[in-house]
Length: 226
Image (cartoon, one colour):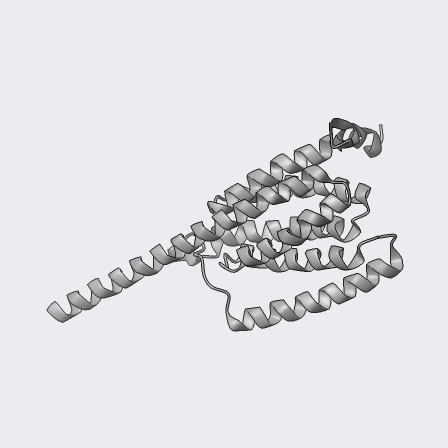
């Protein structure tokens, strides 16, 4: 039995939405993706293994749809998931434990924007010349935005949610255009979860800053009293 024989049942239609068959792959990608973003919004470590499973489902789905950059992006996501998983458990340092939520620095923004622009241009040319993609620019743009957002997610940068929001606003019509209606609907849900994640991470960061100020005030008071 070959790998194709094992994976073939996942490609079979499960339901029909708007006269378009929806495969098991798309349904499983829908469920695992929604769960992953929900866990990220709550800073739960389990988002990483769930996210890896989601990436595997989407590799199959995007190859079928001819979204080659998005399919390749999932492989990069799997590698970044390993990095993010380690960083969330060890990146806070030996004393602080969990990695705290922080703002993206100006230097990081400069590197991210430069890398995003170069990546979008390079991928657009590559997809336009070497593949049969019908949407090379949009495929490349979402790939670049997603990589930028994932970098921020790995390092718990608050602005990573804004990058995900920008990517989702492109993904929603793109997937609908490619007849991936359930995946397009999934990204509407992702957009809502990203807004919730932005709110939760903002509150967490504000609470941590307030706690540090109280701690500093207490130490100063003790020093003055002594």
